[in-house]
Length: 536
Image 1 (cartoon, rainbow, N blue to C red):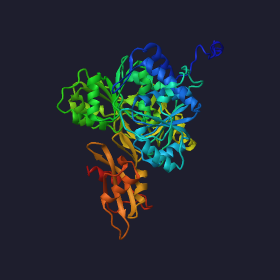
Image 2 (tube, rainbow, N blue to C red):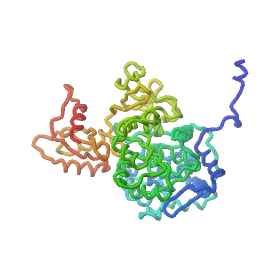
Image 3 (cartoon, helix red, strand yellow):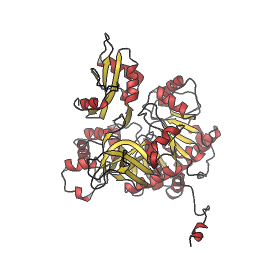
Image 4 (tube, rainbow, N blue to C red):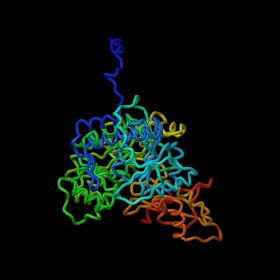
């Protein structure tokens, strides 16, 4: 009878909060002797790594870090950043990984908006943090990573290594799986970046779902290429603890270092943006293919079919995935279908560039006609907006209830990406509904670039759109109207942008002309996008 079922209760025996900290405890007991980290001459077992993590967590608590505090980290992919993905959640604090490619002004904005309690900084990036503090108008407590593999400066704060002297904390799960584990900022595709809150439950399920979708065996050897400031490395640091994997670090994602690491350490898996795959293909054009094949996830702008062809010839088994900062990273995959086996390499690569179907931990990824509220037909031509539901959708935007409510309208998370659905239920993006440019895996806000251009004395009006680029996928192209009687060159405006923006955000081309506008004065960007496509 129904009442007998309803009488059953959650207890400590049958209900435990989901958290990737469980994977740390598993790694310490099950994978203790296995290699967890390879970095230059450094080799550490899971037992050593877990001991370090627990000691560092105790060190942060000794510095006054408390549950709910935000700790920001400015660091390349190195073992310390990997350890912080467990150490900070162990204290109850929230990990905020900062994009090392951002300009000081944006870093200062994030530090302020995130209510950062303390900053962990790699000493090579101290100058960047110092400039951000100058923009912020104040300093914050700092812990410095003194990496022997890189030069650096010091602000005089305690070092990361000094925290290792503390008595290690026990691994204790959070009281509530809804507690924040990470705060990741979007690339500011419509102005200022928004803070995206991840919870322990979502991080746990992201790791489980990725391992299943990628069909990963135990003990993979994973090369850390995806920046951990991108959706916490797509959740892969937590996944490696679950599987007893080995994390291999090169610090700098240069082609020669990546290829050398693959060969030296027997790398089996890695993730990378399409620009990195193209870089590897160009560097490895005449080499013997990897055998067995290296399993690779790629995400960002859809990879050009030509790059997929080249990487397949190299011995890379590449799978396209799709996701957003708001979804913890990838939530759909272009899973290979057997009936593709007999197609030509070019045809296969075209299909591989699709965004595919939902990961197993995601309840639903669909394409909806916003006007009718109905899913679009599976005809490969009718366009709608990608909408997502599931446990790996963010808790919400930090300190922005209005934006959160808009993103979650009608019980879906709305991606802003326009797409079609094919007969086999695979999704394919056709156009971005927001004016976002994805260049080498980095999102660039056209609004942000336009704002800088408008600050130049010679600029009357400006519009920035994506222009196809052989290497980067797409890059910013600026269309500019000059003020009457004033002159400026393309090089001058590009240089101006570079002094006020991160280099990758600056336009790569500037076209001077009268901008097309509606009767109300709104710039007709769709015309400029079509123009930019012809400028490749």
